[in-house]
Image 1 (cartoon, rainbow, N blue to C red):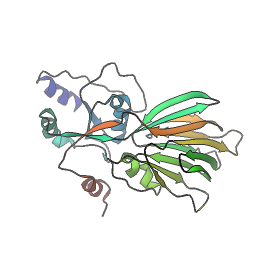
Image 2: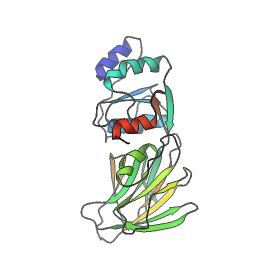
Image 3: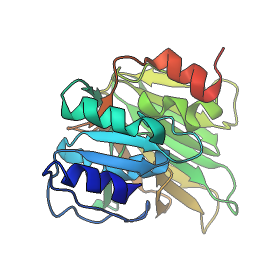
Image 4: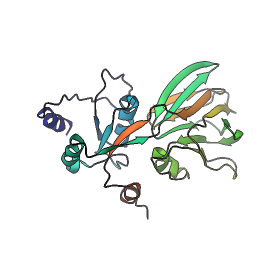
Length: 259
């Protein structure tokens, strides 16, 4: 499909490059395209957002995966969608993203972007972990749990709803903090303004903790007890190509059979 689409665009004297990188890798883009067409599942689009979308390049998702919740079109409708895009009849929708910074003993160990969510959780060998969160105007929030998930409105309909978090309209700007299996009945999901960064320090009862930070289900970083994780709004965000003929409720009903 990628080769067929490329040939059709090249016939219009457009420059096309194919990228067969696998989700999970993080190559550095060598040029800035005017449009990225992501052919695959949601994971492929999340990968494209991380590699190409951070510079503001619009993304057009084509679903060839299992669900394709983030994809704008199915393969059979791609020619019509491309005609609309080239004619300027589709518009871009700005989606909030997260920037995640991990510091260890004062040194920055990792900095990455997430369009859906960032998760800090224990591995199979670990007991409950203690999460000490600090949020502006909320003070400190400490609880023991399997982990915690911080989602964007775009990612609120992914791992977040499976963990009992709320669905949030995707064009809003907010952060959803959802504890994962907390060891208390009083720790509940919290919706925060986008300019309220979340800082967390992870503690563990195990001398050799098995703790991970996972961004968009793809990037996996091992954490140590005492590591500081800061999550805040990404400065740029991501631009998705969308059709005005579909709305969020239609997608919920079609993709996850919401009543």
